[in-house]
Image 1 (spheres, rainbow, N blue to C red):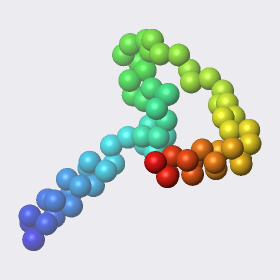
Image 2 (tube, rainbow, N blue to C red):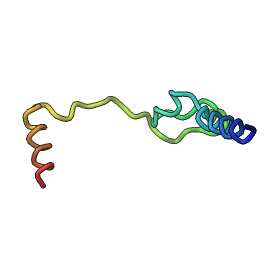
Image 3 (cartoon, rainbow, N blue to C red):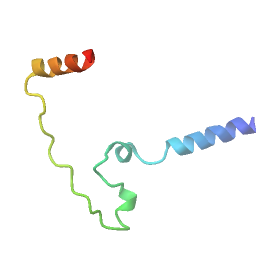
Image 4 (cartoon, one colour):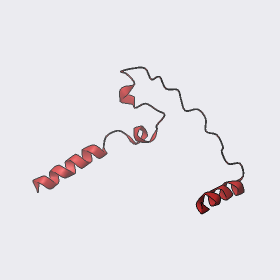
Length: 67
């Protein structure tokens, strides 16, 4: 019983490290680290549209799948 409780507490502690925003935003520095040093990285910048033609994109995917 004590062992199971210990495992649950450890699992909950590890799963709770950092907020969802800190875990899913690779371009942002976690808020708890910003006060220690300057961040030399640049912002990510705007997203760009990659595939203008859906038919061309599907043709490329199918070509890769057949290899």
